[in-house]
Length: 353
Image (tube, rainbow, N blue to C red; front, side, top):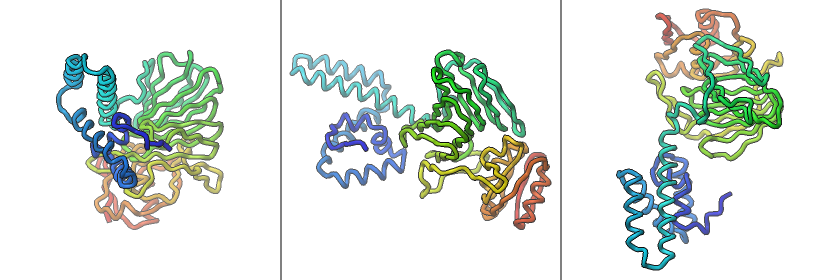
């Protein structure tokens, strides 16, 4: 827990959650700081000053270079005043740079094309309905699920082994303690030595997850929330996105009461199949899930677009297993569980009551 009791205005300024509170960009941060301010009236003056500086420094629409230049000129003009003021201004100038940089990164967080800035040697991609097995130069294997991509770093297997993933993949990593294996996604980074795990990080879904089958991995959320998480075999961590995701005119967002990060165990069904990795065996395992939860899986698996004519249908719940069935056979099987109608027009499926 961070002790903020001795914070000055500049300390608050460089706290990313305090910036989000000032900008009103994150409800969790706003709620946290409102409670903090109420519980620490003795810091009201310092916090007010920090908010004022944030408004001046990051709220000003002039470019950062102009602000720094003006600040520098002002500092130069005051050279002959007491020397400690010079250093105080330098601290504020550094705060300007850090606030602006963090603010820029946060505002662009949900739309970044690549999470890790690494030189890419090659990118493998899959289309909807396609899966692909890739053997890396270190002997590790990657099974790439539908509508996914993995970029291999140009310096892969030199001092480190780094990849960038969009979508879903199952990794079986060869152990090499001298060359850590790293997986970068838009939500989190994974550090590995030798292990098998599944990562699901589609940009058009409201959550991302990692499931550990064997070995040990550590994870850290890109936005810094949650610290470092160590997973043991059979554990799964789910990251719920703070941003609203718009896909196909449908607004997807996490429930207001849902925690940002959940750690639990993978789902094991009676025949010892792990639901989260069943796709690696060319199977779709649906286990007590809402229609809207399996919508994305079916769309990627069968290269279709599913639309619900009535929101109530989205909450129909199913448990089922599919392997070689067509989309028509899948719809027909689901109809036996819940009463609904569907119409197929090209690659679009409209589901109604």
